Length: 190
Image 1 (cartoon, rainbow, N blue to C red):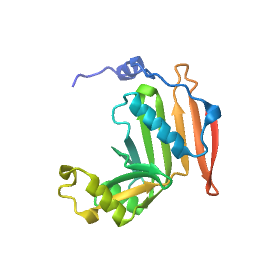
Image 2: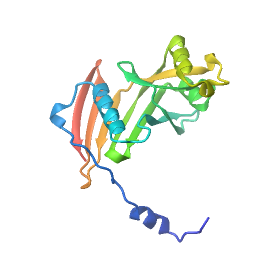
Image 3: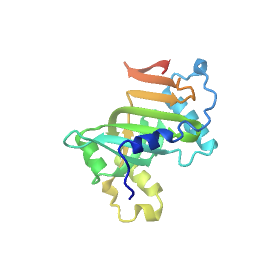
């Protein structure tokens, strides 16, 4: 590894291009009342625009000492129950979700300059749903995984934020907050 002079990494980082994608039109007047509907539209647009692996997300949890932990995984489903992710009960994420059943998910679709982040409580799916998710994996992906160790979790967000970047740095943020069993929406330019 080459050595760097103090400050040279900061200079190098500042020299890197940012927000190089092309954001699509974003009509704030026609936003849906439910964030799931907007998320589905955005992830489909990302896929149609050629974003590689648009279902990849970063799942953030906390460990037993309250320290944040994050990893990239694949979104399994999204709908009225929330955003579905899966993994082994015996993994670090499984232990962390068992001890602190709350998480955040972050999606970043650079080519379309969009991100979605959400956070809220996490609930385990039924054993049957988890078994069906495991069975849907390829034989090589499920090899060696005992069925009782595989869990499908639902992140049931209390907050969902949609972010679209702009070259002038006046980014658009749309926030959905769950209050009293209904969604409340606001937006701002930051």
